[in-house]
Image (cartoon, rainbow, N blue to C red; front, side, top):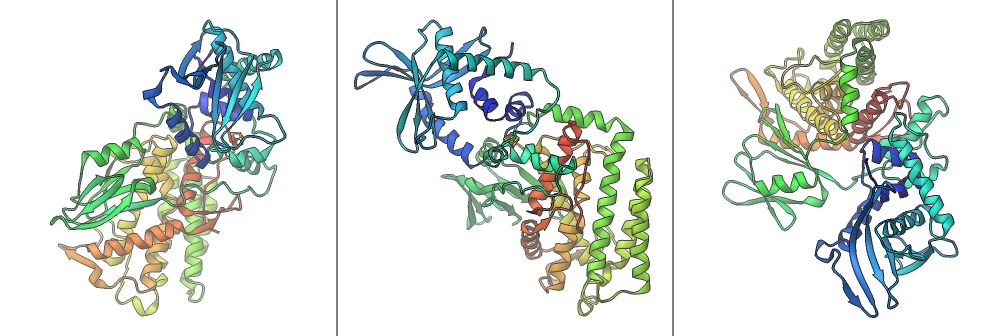
Length: 549
Ligand code: SF4
């Protein structure tokens, strides 16, 4: 029998859906409150003090005492078990906030404490008449009486949790929506978005921004070395000149381009902190990632694989990908050619629109690929005129050439798409997907098909826009590129310039076409994957993709 950790009882009383997501689906996400709480418990549950009796004044303390009960069906760790001078034992649960004023503590905290008291009784100790919640924020203890009524309520909660363990359907979102805005699972749960897609609302309230101060670190100096010293990542040039450093606390990902050395200590620490380390060739080809242990979200991967092998339903996702991509391409083309539209351009816009319409009735993925190919050709036909007239001579572009890129514009696009693929790959793995199992791109050895699927939503809005913006603003000159045997690629300086532009673009905010709120492109990629996940798990009846309007 699976024993339910008592902290999950607290989650259930806060919101049954929260319990389900954490305990049944194994989904977890930190926010500032959970990080603070974990740090506090890390200190409280110091392994050195575990269950070691410590006399303090007239009391005996045992920290981090772990008990389970098959009969109750729960397991849990008591932050503190205290014995007063009279031999009476009682549990003390640490909470990071301030003690409540003029009201009882929240019911979820009382239930958690009562479950600890019941665990004590199940393990041969007398049921304590009271327990204490210790609020670190105000350094105050609040007594909670372990009444018969509270015990009955706690047993009811345990029974309700056990019943949910066997459920396949996600419980409804909590009625009191204010609770959602303090809940760390909000970016995974997406209750507002669910209501919009069900037609109950027109706009969703924006999900909370997270990891605002986090950064990606790119290292592309030939022969550079990345090491670790006192929680700081340090980058050294071959002659041991220090090139820079970054705090691990703020590191979102580490990207190593070309022959860069990295120490085992860095890799261990990145895995421990769930920070991915990506490897790219000098030309920007994605080689792989050192990622933390595989996501626990096996239910999501099962749903992903099941959908992958169902061609009809898989085609629904592929169709949305192609339609969204062509919509963004058309919008971007119309924006860039607002003041300079030839009859040919107008024709191309019409044709893309017609192809989008044809996608709606296209029932096979092969057909969709054909339509996408035609639409992309129309888009790239207009592309040379997205560049300002005075720069067209320098940055010539006759069409998309990928392997290998033959000029500066193609080199920038290829490098940009490789970096975007790396970002989509990282986001897919973080959300819990298998990045190699997609719906539109054919599965092939070594091809991250799902990452490439998601990337289709963001090629034009992120990469093409970053490339065109940088060229038109005079960021690049031809000295930022090198040519070798018909291949054009970015120099080290050129790569640096591009990465700065790309990171800036990722931080730009854009309105979601359906939910209405604004989010950075970086978060939009993650949101798209979350929506896909919810759709695959059956939490949403409708799937929607991102496009620019
Ligand atoms: S976001 Fe709201 S509905 Fe979802 S788990 Fe959290 S509290 Fe419950």
